[in-house]
Length: 207
Figure 1 (cartoon, rainbow, N blue to C red):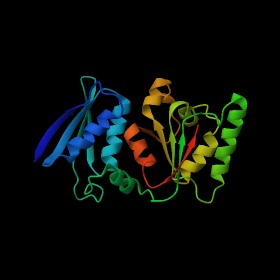
Figure 2: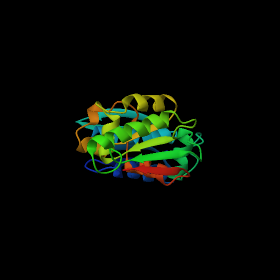
Figure 3: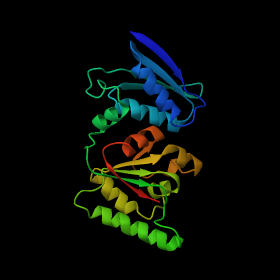
Figure 4: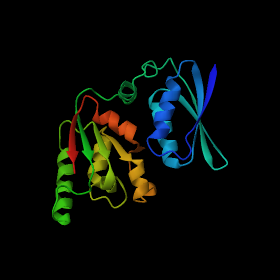
């Protein structure tokens, strides 16, 4: 067995996930320990490894997170080296369906009040669809919609319960000081979000 240490302290998103992915793809490496210095990176690396079918053991030492990842090559996901294929297989995401890329907490430009009314109307419409979105991806001020005080909390909860994946940009949550106010779904990173955007889905951008 081969072991590797991956020090990701001080690295911004999505570099901890990218470095973890590269280390796991190296020939002969069975176990790696990834060191990160913030909770968002911890969650992102853990989620990536678990989605890829690997085992993660977490320890906190000297104020840093030590994530020991053991490869699981018996997992159907771990047999593929393509990150997009890993992610799709791990989440059970279908090849078709719609992905909504939401970068604002209002719909359209102009009146903020009207923009909030329109975004509520959009999410109400999404809950009434026979086939709800496969995923909702929230970036920039769009992250306000997945946090406390969201005008679409009820609609989001319905979509989430119906199986829609809800991902919120961790860097954006930190920038707007909202990390502790996330209501539902998972904190995500640019690598994972890009996998959705570049996959075989119809992407609808809300800005």
